[in-house]
Length: 165
Image (cartoon, rainbow, N blue to C red; front, top):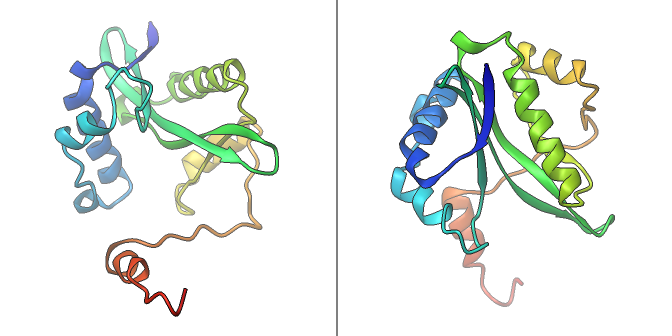
């Protein structure tokens, strides 16, 4: 039997392992540099200041997957949304509806918290995930490109001289 529950502080090692499992699946294991201290610092404070939330999926008590999410905000709609950073089901547990159950729980959270919707990204080569999302009638925002600034580019941008700004 599959169960979905909110993660607790004691789940931090498991969450970190699931993040690393996902990075391995996405062919970038070296990119997952988060630590238990990072997850503890940014989540599980219990003060309402958490930077993220996590749901854990278990099948017969065994950790099967997770959903890692946080809030964004639509200035046009004037409402929050949920950004799904990671949705991952371990290969041994796939095909049992666990990903769908995780997404359904996030959808209920979105509705309960008056969010406009859920948004996420998927790698263009990840056909199984794309097919799964399309089966749920999720729409791809093909007209949008995702941009990111990090590392040296972020540091350089942050110190632009005042006369340029």
